[in-house]
Image (cartoon, rainbow, N blue to C red; front, side, top):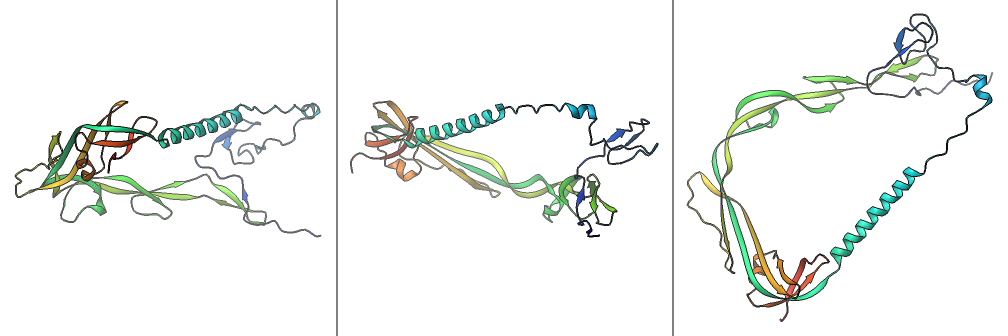
Length: 274
């Protein structure tokens, strides 16, 4: 009287991945799956009793004091991290001003040369261009999905039980599929790196390298780097202009106001006289 049906859908036992372990029956020594309630050989219970012996209950063990070492270590790590952040902000944010005179300049410019021809590459089979010549292929893991697919491997977790509310549990096992696809080598005509040309100088007239290219060659990626050396009361300091226009303004003998950080690195420059 007054009873109510149990709620359905409750998971009985935690879900675990991996194989089910074997345990020994305390009565006959037979090995059984760990999720088995009784022994398959003698029928004895495999579940450890939840009530301790009376002798053990008469003198309960005092709880062990929790160690404060992990908490102290965590607080110490947080404090150290905050100190490092403050130090970096302080060193890189503070600015000191110096007056510097341009003593020397230098520049380097490089340009890649690409050549059109047969190249060997590799990729997944569905990403290979149609006009490529296919080479050797092998199956490799590509992704995981819930539904089965060709060249897939089913991987399942440990079975677990869901309460149906009727006194009979439903055994459920979650599975996924590791899909393997063909990863292939192929050959195709395309542009590839062939050579690199470079020029450098110590004046304010930077030039790009020039070469006589064949019909199957072209210029590729370009790169340029500039350096200005200032004579200051702290010695010679190097600055790397971000553009050719700023570099060309740094005439030999001109004076500049230099902003430096705590490491002595120049971060900004502006003419001392307008």
